[in-house]
Length: 330
Ligand SMILES: NC(=O)c1ccc[n+]([C@@H]2O[C@H](COP(=O)([O-])OP(=O)(O)OC[C@H]3O[C@@H](n4cnc5c(N)ncnc54)[C@H](OP(=O)(O)O)[C@@H]3O)[C@@H](O)[C@H]2O)c1
Image (cartoon, rainbow, N blue to C red; front, side, top):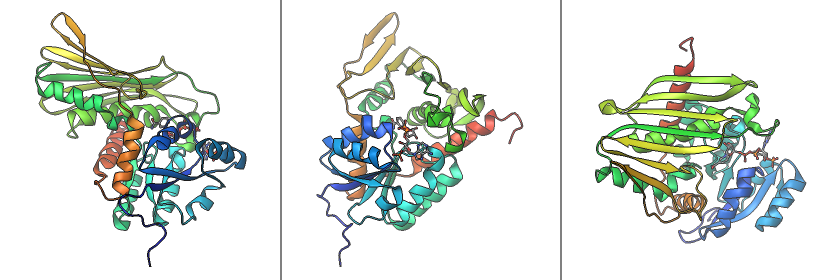
């Protein structure tokens, strides 16, 4: 007998949402409403009023408690935007209920936990994907193409920063028990773009994290890629808003503004500097959250594979940054 969870290749993926997170409200659920390949079926919160408010806006069922949502047999997959420090157990539970998982980024706090969850997803034949939306914006492929075409000569270095202003005192990012801190919240983006542009053969040659409120509030990382290419990365909570990178080559440089958070209406801010000239590269706006959701649905419905190697490479790099920043050398 067919399980009620099995859908054909063409049917929209029936999605449950575990936690009424701000990012779900602002970005992911509005994009899901536009995605033809996704139907949001139910949304769960610890607080029934909050679940109702989200459910009313997005036209789905409100559920009180995460377990009640995972026990439903009318969903194929879940999106889990819980704080990273408590994500592992809910991702594991969802996989064990036979649900495909789109997890907020990063999947977990460390590589050994990521390896376990990726192993479970493979064993169970389920899709496990991290919601790094920037990977689904076409501006980075356009930058890579420009570099391949020789627009800035051989790349010498990458500089990237992601910082956000001070958050409310009770924000999950200031809670060590919930996996708070700048490295896991914003630092993962400069590390991610380094992997996307320079590959995974990376050596962390230096890292520094500054602490306050019981979490790391910011830091800097120095990375060496093959052929002497370097990356200098910075990130922070409680800084002027900035998410930018520059690829610097032998004959010029390319700078991308709003590198990680371009809204769907924004014409990409990609500037090519060569000699004494700077020109804006003509690119179309793109909807990275919609693309992310469509890619997840394609994976769930078997239309395209979803690789899990990037999850592991990213988690191992984060671990190496932590180790390099620890003066005790652990
Ligand atoms: N992909 C992106 O572009 C992007 C952007 C921003 C944030 N994020 C990531 O998304 C995740 C959520 O961030 P956010 O800013 O949306 O945070 P948030 O609004 O605080 O959402 C976290 C949710 O987790 C649930 N939760 C469960 N236990 C909790 C606890 N003990 N304390 C607080 N909340 C708890 C809450 O849902 P209920 O109250 O409904 O149970 C809460 O709404 C983070 O990992 C963050 O890094 C991703």
